[in-house]
Length: 267
Image (tube, rainbow, N blue to C red; front, side, top):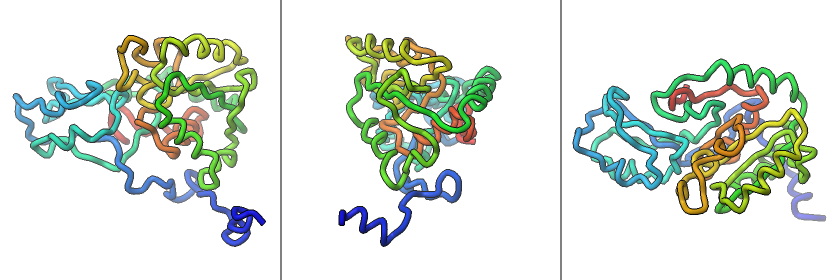
């Protein structure tokens, strides 16, 4: 008898009830996105801005008491800003990245969700109430996002229980899920996959590289995010986003979960 078969007979179902019930998402204690606290921040201090490798941090008048703003679509959660901050303005949290329909909702002090985004969620929910088939395209990833995607099919997360499946053919897919920094050599295959998908079809950018270009943004072979190439319906930053965050983003697309981040703030 196989070891996993014996384990299953002894332990029963290993799948979590989250997000339907409970809070057992498997990400307790994981470092999350840094948050800006209202506090005294010296006008001349730019330690966090200088140390950020993706230019995710800047200053903005009246953005907050500190004046610090963060674009979470660029953040790779390296925590370097928290480490160099001399005052209690930037704080590490265990709040991981969550998906949004509007790219501006990942920017501190940005506009709230647009009516168009709300209408999009309603249209998607009427079409895909039972199942969703995904075609994944790696457009130049380091492999981190792919590791998290693979975890979706393990016994704990068991993505199939939610009626969500990966497919090998774009002709059978409803959603094009893209990871990576969009290297120029992958633009052709990416557009070919998109054009092969039947209508209606949707696009999701997974990981900071796909959202904004990430650490390789603006390089000789990379762009500034997936929205330069295709119409993106859901953005999920993170380096990489964990399986629970990916599940939330997929359910957000389907209208089975609500958007929890507005204007860069968890609500």
